Length: 286
Image (cartoon, rainbow, N blue to C red; front, side):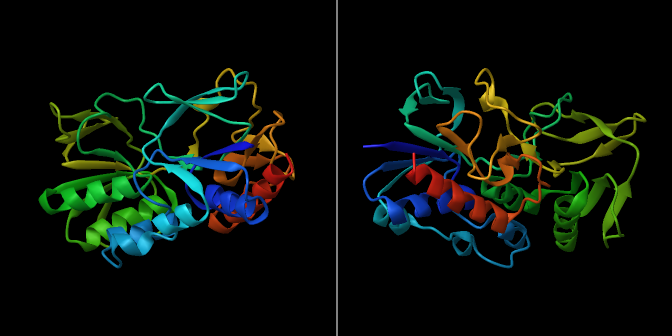
């Protein structure tokens, strides 16, 4: 029986698992997710932050889906290393999951900058449901929130928080003014102050601004650390062909982490699902 392992429990990974199971009832499918939740619609996370919907309304594949499709979903199972010679995924807890074929569908991540204080309580790299829930839990006692970034994610995060009547300092460039948001441009953050919790930030001009929460919402990038020493080729993402194969014939990639050689990186939910379905088809042929 073929063992298929998918790292990633979102659009691309779910679409791939569905495509495999539609055509192949025998192979085992294991999905590894670093998160604690069933598959949810990441495009709606800011609506949760804005209190426009409830957490349960984000979920688009519940426990019944995994059971009915004979998928072994392993939550809070963070993959940290690939051993391709032995075909194993090594997890953070030092256990491993064997595979015959592997799909990397890990998407993109906002990472914390390498500055002093970035690991303090109250500092958030905005990526997933856990981060949104942390922000919501702590906003009631927040006096000033610093949002760092550019683009739609950062702007909308700042806007939603400002609408809750909380002071927002925005470190970056906004393409248009946002009511209640104080923009501080060309003066990057260099340190987060406080003992164990964020209390203030220091800017490049040495100005200090009090803050009880610091949110990094820059453009996310593929997390490629897991590929070290594997020989899997990248060019800012994992290079794949039209069948979503990498240069290693039993390893595929799909979604925002993938880079179709020679094609523009469009990204987005619909593309991730389309690539996932294509990867699922390829997995069935392996």
